[in-house]
Image (cartoon, rainbow, N blue to C red; front, side, top):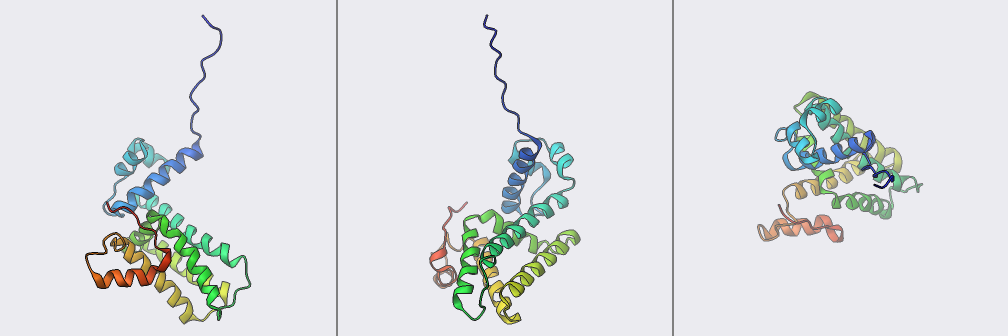
Length: 200
């Protein structure tokens, strides 16, 4: 018999396991929203036990708030990458094109945007509502301070981003034949940045 030890399977460390569950939670919440997703559903998505999810993250609302905050942080990080190359001139269309392009790049990650939409929709849950209000306020402040733009300019920019989210949440890009008018608006809103996804 050989004395060579049998190699052991590499075990995932705590940080990797945490990331695996958070990624699974993001997918699950993106599909079902806060109300329609249980910690058991998250556990099944991650391939772990439900008690493990609860032990790692606590209650469902705590887990959702964490996933939701990651979505907000991802958006702010994308904007930070543009703003770090400043100074930006809020009177220059190129400034807004760069910021819009950074946001549009996130369109490929439908889960991130859908989690954000579900978070806003679950605003009646105190913990989620507070996180949503703080997140939107932080994005508004980031745009205002980073570009020196007016209140109206920041509002219009954010409003356009919310329109993209709504169109994605109703899967408007994937169903152009349902409404000619909506398809026209969708193409106008996304322009050349549209990243189609397969409908569920």
